[in-house]
Length: 210
Image (tube, rainbow, N blue to C red):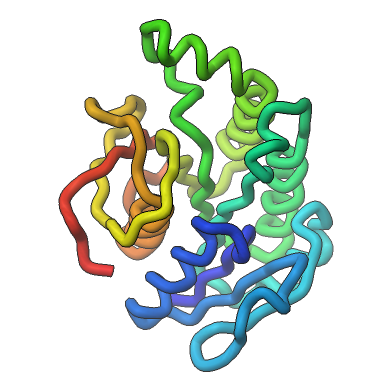
C-alpha cells in the first residue's frame, strides 16, 4: 500500500512510518519540517502545511490511505486552539479532491464519558484540547470518507506495540499506552479495512508483530 502520513515528525507519526515501512508499505511523510526525517527507500518526504488543503492535495494522488497523527505540543493542550479542527478540514477537502477515501486519525480517550474524579479532573484540565478534538471528530464523521477515529489514553514512549481495541468505548485498564501501539493500530486498520466509520477506544495489550 501507499500510505500518506500527516504529522509525520511527531512521536506517533514516526512510529507509523517505522511500522509501515517494516511491513513493506511505501510511505509519504507530509511535514512542515521535512529536514527532521531522512527520505530514501520506501520513504518519501514532502514539505507542506497541514492547514492548507491545496498543499496536501498536490502530494496525495495515488495513495491508498491517509493516517493523521497531528497533535499540539503538550503545553498547547491547555490553551484554546483550533489546530486539529483546521487540519482535519484541510485533510478532508484534499482527500475529496484527490479521490482518496480511507482516513485514520488520532483523537483522545478524554472524550469518552468515563465516571470518577480522576477522569473528571482530566476532562476539566484538558477542556480546551477536548473542545478541539470534538470539533475535529465531528468533521471526520460527517466527511463521507471511510474513516476510523482512534481514542487512546495518555501516551508514553515505549517499544511496546501491542494494543486492545474496543469500538465505542475505552477498554478496561486504560491508563496509558505507547505511541507505537497507537501507530500499530492505525496501520492495522488500513491494512485490514477494519473499524470503518467507528470511534475506537485503545489500551495496552499483547505484543503484535511490528
